[in-house]
Image (tube, rainbow, N blue to C red; front, side):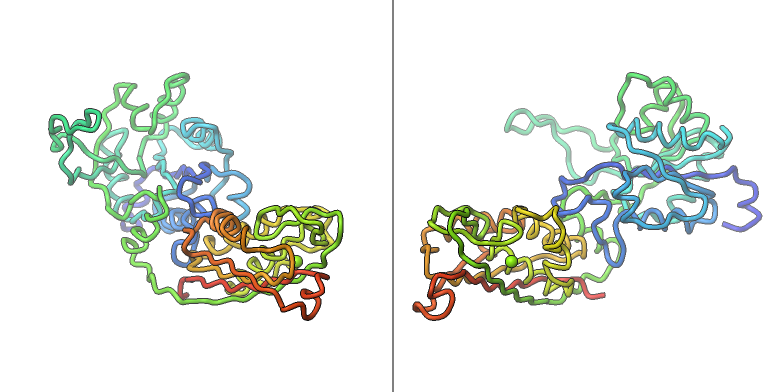
Length: 392
Ligand code: MG
């Protein structure tokens, strides 16, 4: 778009919705913060709008944690609190745009769609010169049928149907009116609210790159659509830990409690196996060790359940765009016998790491009554973690 064409345009604001928790994706972090290539999912949309010459400002609707993780907002951008429902989030953003004139244009976008192309923004803004609302749509490629229990029913005419994407574009005054009149009526998007005013909503060609991140496997689809290199490297980390056995303490090993005359002494629950595995994962990430992230000097970790440390390490992997390929653990103890508890430990560790059971191994050995483990003074654990991490 040329500079002279730009000067004729009304001001354009963006409402970027990043308020959802997005835990359905199973990425270990809110989906808007998952790493897609070199930057979080949310940053892709922020950058796409900030770099578009027509966009003069924006409202990012996100909670404080997301704001802190995202870092600086572009010039002219402000933040607003998310509502419980999407509609309330948009209303909060509209309130934050109170000093924008009704004649301005506004683009409402869901941050779970990181692939915003400048051409889509151009098409939407062009449409707003002839209409008060415009949305991107795509055809439905599959045959559609009615679902009748477990049976296929009548074929639905898909030529009369379309898939709706965001950003959705509106005259700001029209969107304000739609929200003001929608007090009790919930809608899943803003175009529906505007249609209830009797305002026509135009459609423009959507874009496959606006694919929505809903499930973990959508990350690979988006990487392909956005041309992000999916080259991964293997990283292996090892961990080792020892805790002293003392009487009158519960014994936690491998994420489960075992009935025994003695337990392990330590600042947390002293789960020696989960500590070794946490260090192995942090080692593969090159991300320090368990003591750096959870200092024993910090009273908040007194008696802490060690699955929190291991879950934290797994989240660091997901946030880096990586995955845990395998975790292998060896517990070194004279007593109690580990064998009867191995299956339960394996299942618990797979659960904490959110990986399949076959990617977790738990083994045990004695030291033939030699050394501190042989004298039952303590229990040791060794772990090896194998990760796949994106090449940068
Ligand atoms: Mg330890």
